[in-house]
Image (cartoon, rainbow, N blue to C red; front, side, top):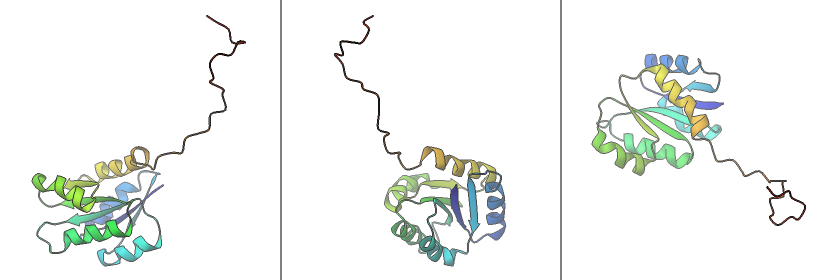
Length: 144
């Protein structure tokens, strides 16, 4: 189950995204006020958070950076008012942002992207011990 924190100032957009997430059995959305995001990150492990990233809003980069400091493994998805592709790659690296998504966003497409996090970006599995003897040179093996 992918736990998703939705910390958007726009309550209507947060509701629509949460409703879209609920259409997938593997997503568990939580709508949270932006000012409570950090205490909720501290309480429980979440796999993703959605925030509104506005280049003109003071402290927005610092907000994303603080999320990353609290949880090094969480996927941060940022909704953007404008598409600033020239800044995206640099900020993805500097702030550890998983994805920038320009507005307007299709909530169902966003939920599908979140669902793929569980299968495509899950922590690596530990190798399984192989109980089959793969040694060569066994004289009892049939030769073809």
